Image 1 (tube, rainbow, N blue to C red):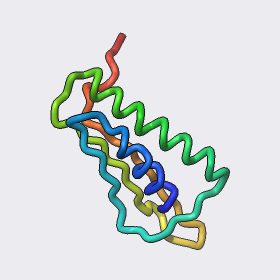
Image 2 (cartoon, helix red, strand yellow):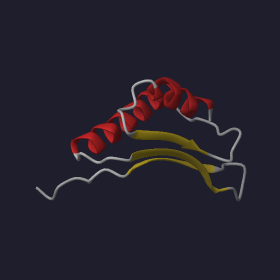
Image 3 (spheres, one colour):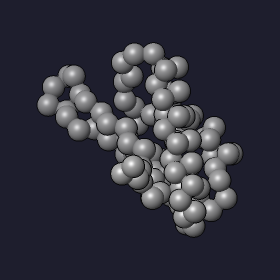
Image 4 (spheres, rainbow, N blue to C red):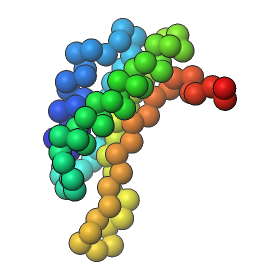
Length: 94
């Protein structure tokens, strides 16, 4: 969770005007399997791409939501999902 919060906090200072960046999670902790530095970089890239998509689309009232949720807690190997969602225009079919 702190890894995600760190990325959101770092990028909150570069959020384009008119874009709202939010982090949503009810979880206090979630383990990271793999390199925390690489996961952090992936999150940074996804959030920055979301900013670009909104700005490129000329959307006012843009929103980027980064969320963390638990999707499988049946055993000790819980599975978590991180989502970066924006309300930009999407990718053209071309």
